Image (cartoon, rainbow, N blue to C red):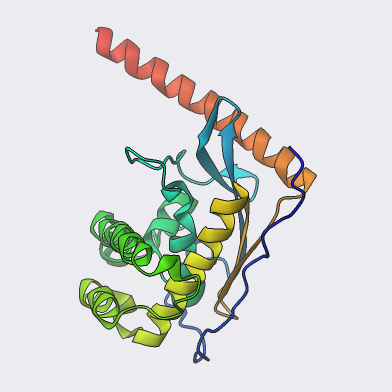
Length: 239
């Protein structure tokens, strides 16, 4: 399908000036740090499952296939933009660390507390809550502020994590950036999410033909791996 008119790529419009970036993992091994710049491709799994997408980072599947998980399609499948917004603007995302293999294994306590299941559940819960909150505000397309109650909840739920020092302005910037990118992906159906921790920014653009080909190869790799896992599970179930 040829798109005759692409939606305008999101930029950092209307966001407040932020202080220097917070890099919570600066003292950890390089292999365990969030990438200071990243590009994650989000596109449908294949023609047979157009309502499910697979994130791909550095040419490899980044996490699992994602659907809306709702009775009515609402484009929640593109919500990785929220996690990547937290990563780029706040320097924090246990979810991105988990799906990208960036958990801080060089420090047992940090790995368990900051990058573990509880922190991941908190981030996923905030993302689902903010999705509902955003719908009430037109997905932040024209309303360029997040309610004080929502920001207070974000800070309350993360009060015992490293991101506890993030201000309301920083949370708001990460949320608005994530939804700017989400709206772009929801309209276009795919895209490349571009994050920069040094600039504390998140943007998106359309895929090139090469990137689409790379994504297709990653999908094939994911399908092959998961077919093998499914076969192993079936054999164990039959025993």
